[in-house]
Image 1 (tube, rainbow, N blue to C red):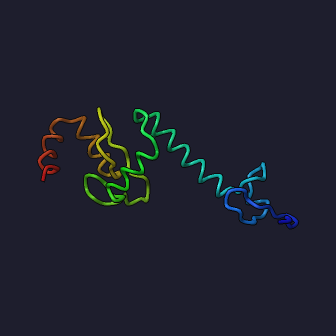
Image 2: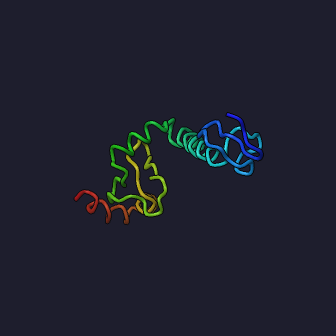
Length: 121
């Protein structure tokens, strides 16, 4: 496929793009470059922060929880990834709201005593 003046073909998505839409090396478009970067950064973050947790294990847990929080059973309202609830062992994935509540409760025994019966129901 010959390239038109000012156009290039992205090696990942195989779409013809304007040169302005390509990274500096010209091999991959900016959109594809960002997709790979965010996923690989997230995989690195999981491995370093959560005792070697892999992206595949996170995605498996996400599917098992059907994409919702382990506590409130709702998706994260901001469209963000669910947070990993990890203290001594991996517990589950939480939305941002529940993650803040659990973190606060772990710091304050009175809050934890109040919330524990609610989570058991």
